[in-house]
Amino acid sequence: MKMFLLAGALLLGIPVTPQQPPRFEPDIKSSRLSENLHVLEGAGGNVAAFTWDGGVLLVDDKIAPASPKLKGAVAAISSRPIRFVEEGFRAVSGE
Image (cartoon, rainbow, N blue to C red; front, side):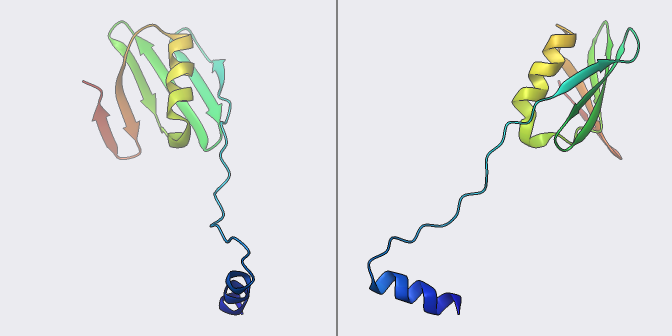
C-alpha cells in the first residue's frame, strides 16, 4: 500500500521527502542535595554530579542528546572540569 501511494505521488509530481525526527532541546534542572552533591534532571533521566577539589564526577549520564546543555548545567554548579563519568558498570576518565 505504501509503495502504491509513493508511486502515485511520484507520477503526479508531488515532492516526497523523508520525515525528519523532531528536534528538541530539553532543559536541565539542577537541585542541590548537599554542598558537593547535585542532581541534574532532564529529558532522558537524572544525573548525579559530585564536586570536589579535583573536578566533577557525573553518575548515570543518560542525557546524551543534551550533552551541551548538560555541560552548561555542570558549569553552573562548578567551575571545575568534568573528570569522571560513571555509566552503570563502566567508568570513563575525563582526562
